[in-house]
Image (cartoon, rainbow, N blue to C red):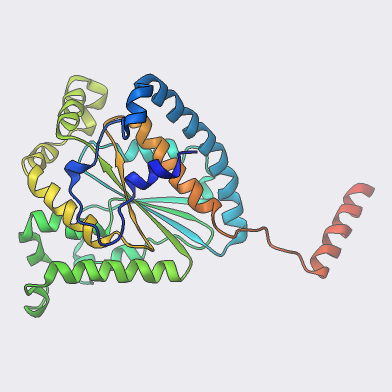
Length: 299
């Protein structure tokens, strides 16, 4: 398991003004880690990932059997930060029947006819399940904030577009997440923090390897031109929406092995921390099981 003091460095306290330059996107989060060296930290991260993958499979079954809680994992990041890979590796050992992943694209006309949270509400996980949002309702205070012309497509009234527009959206998100938590959904939010230089390297890798050409989009390169604007939008969103009930984790993403270890540790620990238990059988059910056992033994 990852030590609490290390996770505390990554977890954004409520009412904190976030500056992403204060968060290291690499593997050495402390002086102690620097002294141990990259190879030692990488080996330990891989051990932590393996341990948590085994534990996650077990606690997921208990989550499903208990059927009182749901888990919502929210992933946000700059392009090429490794969201898809993190989801694939961390969830590789879970039962697909108890896990669902949603990737949200450009909203449809029907979705634009509703409030900005509507299409996400429809995709929330049921009790007993893990839901994963690969991008989420936060796009409406990130992409839309960087490209304010997108607000016009949302058909809002003039009152909705006043000076407090973004503040109100943050408040809506906080209230939405608080409602989820109050009703049994654990909300885990991960911002995969990749450096601009690492993003450049990953884009180049996609261009140089034919089997990765399908992952490259000219739109990604276009959005890279708004890097500073996205940093500011993320800082504002992380500052306004990291709450006691749904804190943000700023996860180092320049090295995929540390990203995956952190995400796996946080989600496994969160589920393990719930008061989960297998359902207790009533007398009638116990008798039915005993009768079934007797019948099978006599065949």
